[in-house]
Length: 88
Image 1 (cartoon, rainbow, N blue to C red):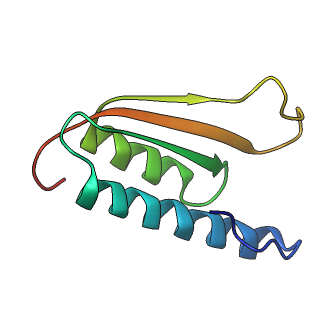
Image 2 (cartoon, one colour):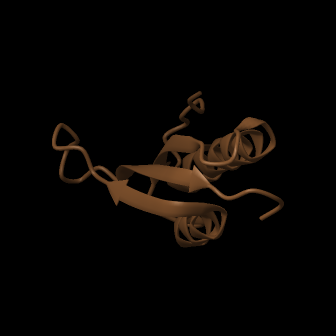
Image 3 (spheres, rainbow, N blue to C red):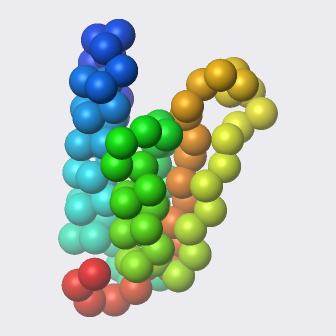
């Protein structure tokens, strides 16, 4: 999934975070305990809260910026492994 980018940072960040939240919620509902989620995120409003929430739901969360990504880009990937059973 990817949001339609408008070029307006605030709008694009909100759209990207909404999709990340949808992916997180889908994974919570459908993954088996121990499952993993990989999601592309952008640093900005909501980023810290989102990663904090992943850390409550999963045993391990690693945030990495790929080497192929431009230095000025805000994109990173979060890999959450070890989905904990039950509600978050």
